[in-house]
Image (cartoon, rainbow, N blue to C red; front, side, top):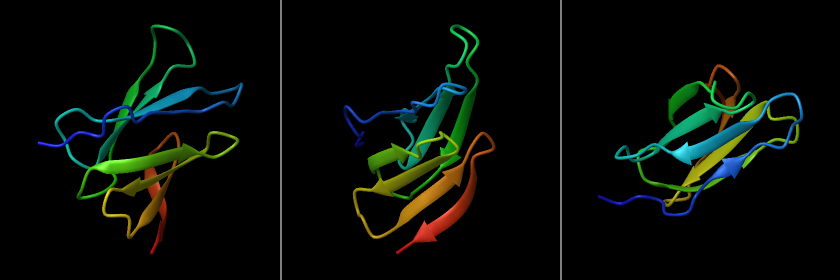
Length: 90
């Protein structure tokens, strides 16, 4: 089983703070933690890709998360806080 070691993305918006991490034991899944209020964060799990994650990046206003897998053929963009896929770019 392969895990993306050391991969994390922290949003920098003052109103909402999210931490995105590869979901443990699930290839291609992203766990998004709402850490705006310490100790009260909720978790959203997103099925982003079929292969392990390679890159994640937040938009400047923390409303979108872009992901790419190790395969690298598709970049997917998800809208927060719902986690809906809004773009799939090849």
